[in-house]
Length: 594
Image 1 (tube, rainbow, N blue to C red):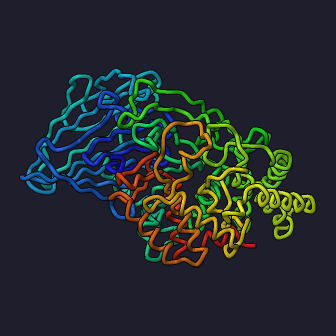
Image 2 (image 1 turned 135 degrees about the horizontal axis):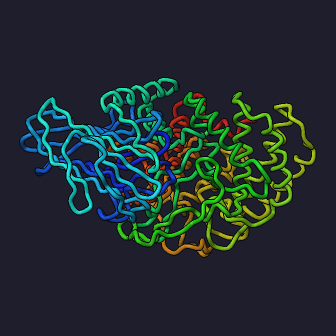
Image 3 (image 1 turned 90 degrees about the horizontal axis):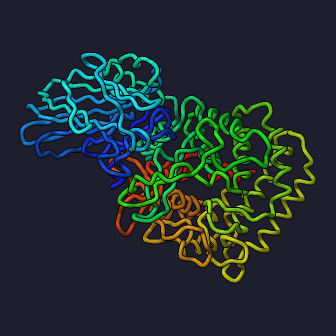
């Protein structure tokens, strides 16, 4: 199950550790690099690193308090031992550290290390570098294992069988480096454990988290920080690719990139919890990524701002539980999605209102984008959900072009910037009239997904939050009621109905989208339905795995996660909804203020 995995990371890459002590996913040296452990999407032949008892065992696990250090306690009838896993942040290289610590009796354990570069396809050449060091090389990549435990080769796998007694430790450090250079220098595992714990606790201490959900919010913040690419400030949607939105289906996408769609809500989640450095880094990344001709603006970028994210299929991998194809890259990066222009404008608007630093050229860049949107706002697009069917006139896309001109007007009127405000007011009014005339079904008292069509879309839950309608407008209450009737399924919200008449270009169904479920809780709060908001939020809190992590989607019938994991947008939703329910500073109010 996807929920069986925990996350460790160092701000440049991340690994997924299964409950039984197996690391089944790791891309090195970056989040979007080729995987060298890809068992998650295949089997043991595609690479993994497992440490577990040789005898029958039970286990329980938890993060060490306020850190991303994962501790798994193995119990047998005779002994117990802890497996402590972490990646050491910002130490000049990328390392996975695994410490086995005896707690009771004497335990026999086994380590199996099977490196397979190139998304599980390339077997490296393994050789001994010195008494405690092995190197594994394939092309440009080198992995270096350092341990005092004797190891041997068996079936293209490095194996160790060892024992630990109470109070004893066995340590394993796997590092990465370019194959044309000497192995990276060794690190002290115990010193790195202390330094890594201190890093995470010191980082959390910079923030301002309080209230009944403080522990859950802090776990979501740590998860978000772990998916932030430290060198640039870009934040990935998830560290995985192709975990299925429906098991056995083809709705499998690569999420190891940074989405403009998520920018405003991510900024507010960071700012409102006191993590202003990360918010500033995110703003700076956005500016660099979108800089250039507005016609070239994309919906997503690589973690350093890369624009070419070609999509291809790793056809040697069968996919998670047979969910093929396994896609690498994301063709949606070339789509036209009008909502991203509104997101970018709103992100800058919220930053200015909060006194966050922006680049001196940001307003100039915005002016060029505003002019571009003035020319294209009537065009059909792919919509917020990256529909792969024919372009349509999505209501939410049009609303977000309204946001472009609304924030432009406010930039002049409230923040003293320059621009043709009368022209922008007129365009804002034109778009508003267009949406009401074509995107609102008066007979049902609800906005609809696309002009002239009956189905709904969960993004409509944001219309009051972005300020297009007021929360007390009957049209908003009607839209929320319609979403409840059409998209609320077994207590969770779907993005849209894949069985509706409109073609989204992909076969099959998907599970409930967790960010949208948080949006419904936010909408309830705006309508004054606080008990409903609280109940839905508690339901969402209840489906987190034992480590407090959330995936992209949830199947309430089979009670299991679906989609990529862990999902930044789900954790952003948790942080913001917790603020909407329990803090004086509420994203619901911030986005629609003025």
